[in-house]
Image (cartoon, rainbow, N blue to C red; front, side):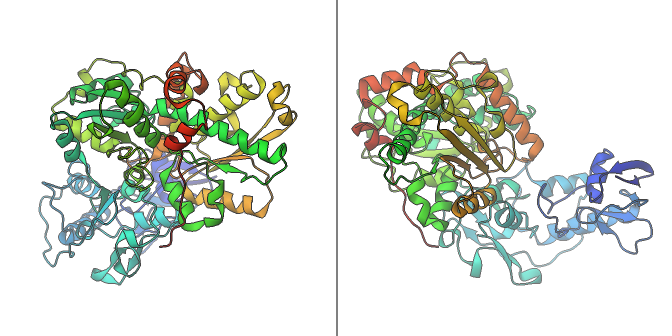
Length: 589
């Protein structure tokens, strides 16, 4: 531990801490524009400067190590004037239209200017050249609004190990974007949206599709249904002033009804369906390897995260056979809604319009994949992020906090607690183990309250082992087998885990990967700003939702059982394979 003073107040922090960490511990706020928690600080924006006794110049607190005996001042006149000058210079070249900008009232630059008392811009000059990139289904880039903070570069390079964005040219001519100033659709961008989640301004945002939903709701004869991902209920409240981790499932359902949707359903229903299909697929692969002594693509990787799927298609062609063939819950829901549900209503598939509310920008890309129309029409028509739904509710004049709690509609609105935890890193794995263990042994998954502690939490890579004992007669080949599983969140961690697997050091059977840090709770479409404190609050809320349900296992969902009985037949059966499974294709940037 080292001791220093911040504004004459003694503070003790661990050796290696930055001044910014020490200042936070002292309960003092310092503005930042380039800093991202957990990533290498680059000190690019100079907004976080402080005065250190004995130092000739002001120093960037985010990248300067704290030292024993250091004396720091965070609010001297020199510091205040330096910060104001930096922000005024940024504003002078910022080509942003605040009145119509997507980030108006949610813009860190706008907020910082207000905090610093900037009422006019003293510097006038050339504005950054505006260039709009709408080449991908998920993201929209506006270089005119970019303030060159490099947050997007940091998350794309360090956190996600994708490297689709990078600074080019120098000085005023600097451009942040794909190589050679190309468009995003020409490089290996997985459209995870983590760049949009950390951008302080409106330079990178999700592609807004609210107008398409309003148009569908206003079209006579069109039956518009909505599905909501499990992570939404633990984050949507933040759009309306609730603290992170507040569960708003009932109010969310009520708001969606008041927006005019004809039925409000739950992606969790399809998550339960996914577990039956994916769990059966895992057991089939294990049977091929252990009983039939034939080659099977193990470990099997989960396929729920579209950013992860794109990552594999770009970077790991050799491992594509290891991906589960299951569609994601979003796409499974769409396929069921336009076949089974349409038949129940006596409607044609093209008369059903499916809207998804997702924490993920990559879901916008996923729903447009050519493989996702096996029923003859698009499985899912439009995807809204959590942020877009928040804007839509406000635009409709709905007072969210005054809404009653309402239940989702049948039959596609019933789900288990296992489906809820799909929102968390490790959740898909735990949900699968709850079902697979009970199918094989006839007994509940051992552990505290059905949880698998080693794969819970926000760690980047986690693993667990489960020994299968006293198995049912049909599964004798699994007697005494230790099922080894691993979980990774964030594509940088996924790349490291893949390296371990390819080295042959760890004989895993089943691996869950989520593209975003923390899983879907930290998705690129969630309310800003998401750090580990926010992720932890959302994660705990999702576990509370799971633990509060009577149904805790996917295979106990009676609505899913009814779906198989009336329509699908059985997991991995002919009809379910046709509607609920797909294949993936190698891609080159």
